[in-house]
Length: 313
Image 1 (cartoon, rainbow, N blue to C red):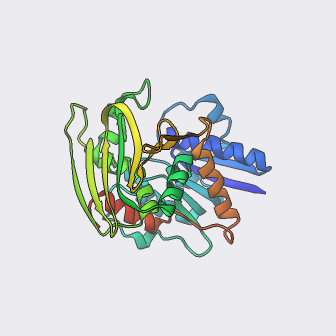
Image 2: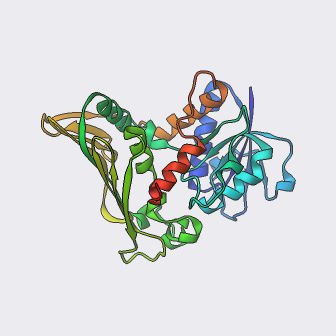
């Protein structure tokens, strides 16, 4: 089997996906033919460059059709990129969030029959999330608190955070959609809420024009979910708390463990679990075994989650 793929963006996200895809294909005996469509001048690391068969700078340089295109460029470019490349690829892997706002015509980018368009949802592949999902399935939850707080300037050592798309509203930056992971996995746990209250703004001294704080209350039939997302927290904090009859269940994504406070129960997960690798394995099965797999994050679902993040339920 030969897979012809194109990466539309080779930043940190694109290179991570390329490394994982290459490793999986080697393990499965799949030959990979990789094209990188690049507009930037960043010098790629040696190991990444060795995984690329061809670099192109223009659509006119495309030869033939790809099996998969990875949309891993800035969020504000996603819609135009998808529209441009639909005719050149069968399947699409679209990095989250799907767009920077909900003003686009979704019907223009729906996949044709036989194609898979998947929007990234890597946190759903972590052991902590899978344990949490099983807990929600087997317990009555009264309320939940979800938080993701960290200091964004320290995310990528050696890089000037002010040059990141995350700081620029026009490029799809802002903590409300950049950290859409939390809203995505919440909808997988509880479904779509009935109502949402959303407050966002720029409150810290970070040099950016996009929002650095977003808080939500999501209303469901049987529970409420509170959510806090920020770019300025100096102590990394990413967890979910579930309040139920016998205590508080905690899923900690930083420490990679879950526990129940009341029962003093603790279960650790291996530190070497790579949920991005797990997600890529799932995506390859999704396109090679469609009769056995369900697309857990279609463009329609990702669009609904984006509208939630923007308070447009």
